[in-house]
Length: 233
Image (tube, rainbow, N blue to C red; front, side):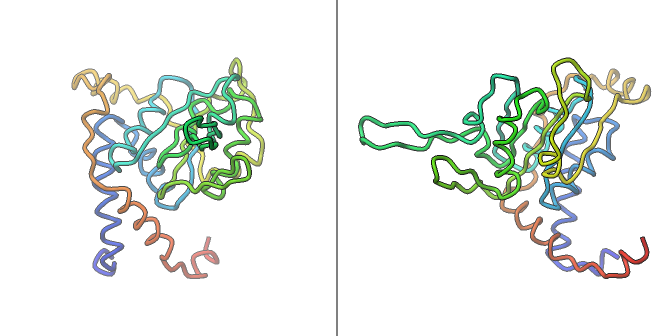
């Protein structure tokens, strides 16, 4: 099967193996979650992680950003976060006598929207354009996001104090919603034995570049899928 792959597809497979190996250094016993996250990224989509605090959601996102050499920004979403914190804003420069665009947190390769369901609907709406079209519009001027562009959002379970349900328009922007869950007893014992329970993502080495990820996403997008695949499901 591997022998039938072309050079670009082999490169995607090689990058995938290297990234998974690096992320597994800090995310133990969650191989299925790591693979799903990588598949979503290679498909050019955004990811929503729904789970209780403390299971490694933020660590997972940061691990991917380091393994893939991606610029990374994180915003802790609270009721007082403003749309301009996400998209950026125009500021007057007295020296040049002109208004200049100041980048928002979303202007990066990988944007982590932490606890997205704790902020206002107005702030959430600031993500709709950027997640769908890969750009933001500020004062009638449109700015393109870097390539590649990925949004990973986390949310606490609906019903937790201070949370509310995401609107359908926001949910539609995510290609997948995953749950991490607590590690198994065996994995907890392994973490304690290896002293990895508080291991920093500093141990993760960059194994791919942003340009390589962009090319991998294009390669995956060009894979031919026969109609028979859909007819047999």
